[in-house]
Image (cartoon, rainbow, N blue to C red):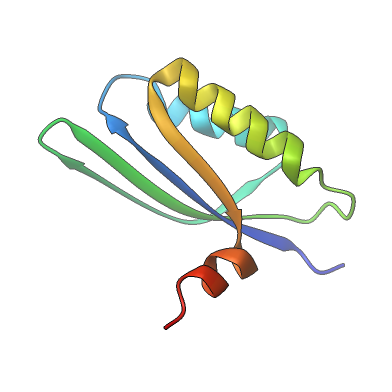
Length: 92
């Protein structure tokens, strides 16, 4: 089975619980973090993750909705893109 990989971006005003909330949803969907980078610029929180799932019948739409809903709860923007889509959109 070939794992599916995703780029997850989180941007918003920093507050307690952002990483915990986002990673809880990931754990619920059995999505593993491959690489992660996080920066706080004054009060602006930014995080980008490369994540993967090894489940063959993974429901990407449900995962994207759960992550977006969690972002709304936390007051941040969360985007989940399949790695292939992200690379296609950012090629020159």
